[in-house]
Length: 140
Image 1 (cartoon, helix red, strand yellow):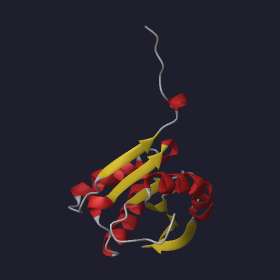
Image 2 (cartoon, one colour):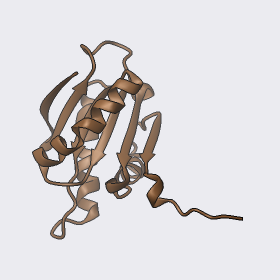
Image 3 (cartoon, rainbow, N blue to C red):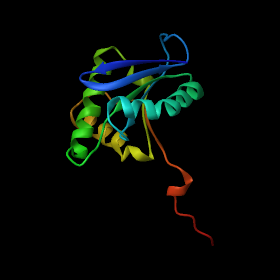
Image 4 (tube, rainbow, N blue to C red):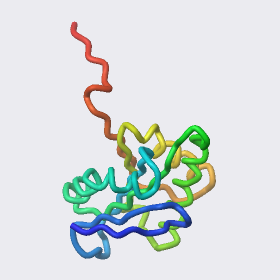
């Protein structure tokens, strides 16, 4: 497993890969919002490794920090900037998916909607991971 920090159009990001990237390999754009830049990337590295290992994908973890001084709109703009960078790098959208975990605050979906409204090519899918503790349980 390898990881490599990149500047994705001014947005802190990190590639996590199980092997050398190859043509036809899926790409997961994993949006994280818990922490600033390098902090968020480090905290999310294990989850990114798990995604890469489970899917045989390369994972681009994107730090879209949300803080009081930045609105969620700023986090969405950061996500869009990183996605635009990935597209300019030649990423195949048919083999690309967005992902986030519960702390992602809906960023993946918001970036997906914003990309569509701006006419950008959309990824093949979007994965939201939520722990069971955030789900209402009912008994009948």
